[in-house]
Image 1 (cartoon, rainbow, N blue to C red):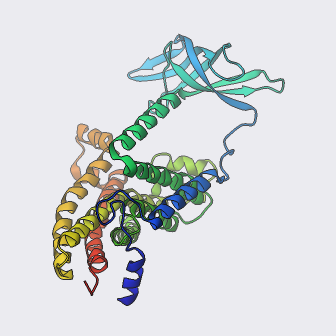
Image 2: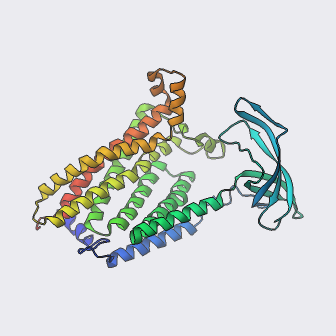
Image 3: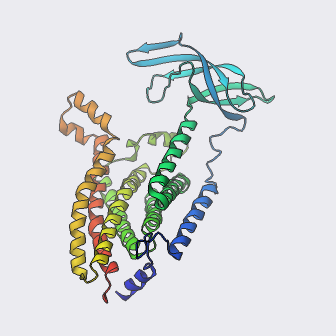
Amino acid sequence: MKLFEKIAAFFSFPGFFGNKNSFKESGKDILFIILICLITIIVFIVPTGFEESGVQSNAVRRKVLIIGTDDTNVRTIGIIKYGDQNLDIQVLSGEFRGEIFTTTNHLTGRMEMDKIFVEGETALAVLTLADDGTISMIRIIDHYRTDKIIILASLFILFTVFLMGWIGLKVLLTFVFTAVMLIKVLYPLALHGYNPLFAGIIISTIISAAILFLVGGLSRRGLSAFLGTASGILFTAVLSYVVTVWFKIHGVVRPFSEMLLHTGYGHLNLTQLFMSGIFIAASGAMMDLSMSIAAAMDEIKVQQPEISRMQLIKSGYIIARQSVGTMSTTLLLAYSAEYTAMIMVFIAQGIPFENIINMVWVSSEIVHTLVGCFGLTLVAPFTVFASGFLLKSDNQ
């Protein structure tokens, strides 16, 4: 217990609002924010080893304008289009700006992969250069969306900062930090052959620590939320392993998984990748729930300093039960979008319910949802007891 109290003492500084609802960060909080900024920048800059793996040295990417289309060779069978769409394009950027070329948009009959262009639209094109610098081949990638993404991201940043102020800046930092840790650390580690289950546990725990201590401050409240989340992640990781093996689910059920195996990454354990996806996806809801419980219990203690530890734990558990009731449904709704069309197809075809739930695609989503909800449910008592012992010490 004394060791627990010593650890808690380190995190006893006020958070964002301080003791008197001021808007001052403690010294340690400021240093922690700077540390997370530096880590984010360093991780973003350090190469993963895959940056140039799919890039031709003699190719450039350019924004182009579709100035003409020829659908003569496009055949329509039902709702599916096959064949070749001939395009006249004008390069809008780079050294070939203003020049007009003709290229072909190949249609494979796969609606999720094919794209049809009309005159006046913009697209992203890859221009392959010959030895003399001229263009030898043009391949249309897809509609050009970079500018729209920049506008949408800018609006998100402006609205977040305008509505939430300093907290909004920290929210943006956690958003960027999470994206960088996943894209630049976790996924490359898995591609390099590291165990995605263990790597997922470590990275999701690091992400949780950064987010919870940024939002809750280096305080007992932040530590309580982190301990609850970390316990939930670890338990959900173990449960995801056990249930996935029990249900005999393989990782190829995820989109593009099989493509990974056929593009030189046959060493990947896609089943473990599927397992790690379960608790990584649920960790966001776990952080939300644990911070809500820890913040509520901290406020109870501040408003009623004379409350006993057991009374505080009891109050926290009442709060936790209400929160879990909504958060589990939130998790279900968040996951449901992934398999809406699939379930609708089965319903439309009149497939018996028992047949549906035994299909690997459906069973995998059931496991994904229920294991995540199971872990979310257990985060509540973990956080309640951690908050009870950290927020209310023996001498209080």
